Length: 458
Image (cartoon, one colour):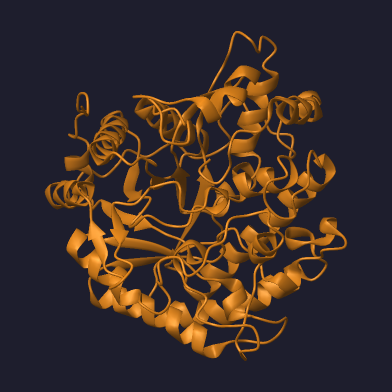
């Protein structure tokens, strides 16, 4: 899960103990070890166009462009964490609000066919029940400009942050997913934005990685409301987020029946450990992957897989992550494992029987040859899965440029380009050219199926 560092060993143990009684069942009583009831998995259409894109998020890319006292000033729960010294300062990020044309210019040069960006709910509704119509207009303009450039917009309606008016500093249990007014305001937000985007957008993602965000916020205590091992609150947040996802899916289809609803879940590949003979850690991590998705898959047209790494589910693995370095690890200590992506595609395809897209994949590294090697081998894993009959329809790189990476600040370098601080231009890295050439040569599912792994990056 890109958004979530490994839980501490103690947190993982206690979280696992909280799930031990239902280690094989999700909250709806379904078996987590086998596929859910579904139609047979269809074979991929090899001549279908393959979606090549980038994924970004509003908070990580946009400058606020407002100051306290401005009529349209807004703040998020993450801004509260920054003000409290619990998260790194963001500043103006990549200036993507005032200089979206810089992102668009880079996207055109890349040849990308799709671009996933998110709406900042707080910017659109800076105070409860008050709407910033100009902000909505600007977001819609982004979608229109992408369409004119031949790039399909994929709009994510929520990407980790909540308006600050949904955050209760005195009672964290009544914040964000669990605020008494969140469902009412979410429905109003949906009804406000969906009709505006419907003429220009064919793909909507209701939420980004709610499974990882909820675990990080209510178990690991690292994201607002920063609660540790709050098991009851965790399950309530899962209930709330899945209800809100399903409401969004229903409204998307009502507004535009032809639109595709895309899930975006954090799905690392978990491996069993000899130090976990009873499967306590392993079952915990599998729950983290599927507790949310099991409740929403049936209203999705496409299952989105955010994959970055594999991890051994054991106490020592969690404890050692921060110190892991070298050829097989990213700069944050995440294990590079293209075969884990292949395995995760198989598991998701067999379990849910739906078309898939890899909605995020990337590596934090200062070594761009390593980034190219990482991309080539993960793309080859997708090709292998397609050859084996799994319906994978797209790949989205994280990310277009080095960006603000939540609790890592600007220290995690995921970008295929970097921003020139004077001109705001996105300056391509060699990996940008590799990606451009790869997608130019592989426009169909069938051609992607032929991609092969590379050797060493050195």
